[in-house]
Length: 69
Image (cartoon, rainbow, N blue to C red; front, side, top):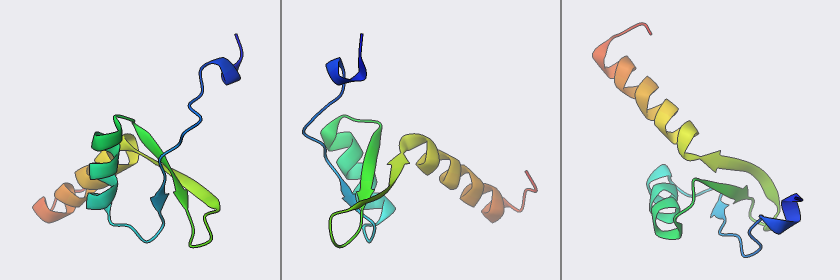
């Protein structure tokens, strides 16, 4: 089996200028676990997944609580 047989071709993307809240809404609405991130010219510059969002939120909460881990 090849990647082409499984890949999605109508991709939802998120702008590099979007907020994390916007990205979460798009992820949930699109029922996907990651989004290509595009610049102002529509070029792919990276990717954002639920894993990165969860990790960042976990680190933020730890900082707020004053934990070192």
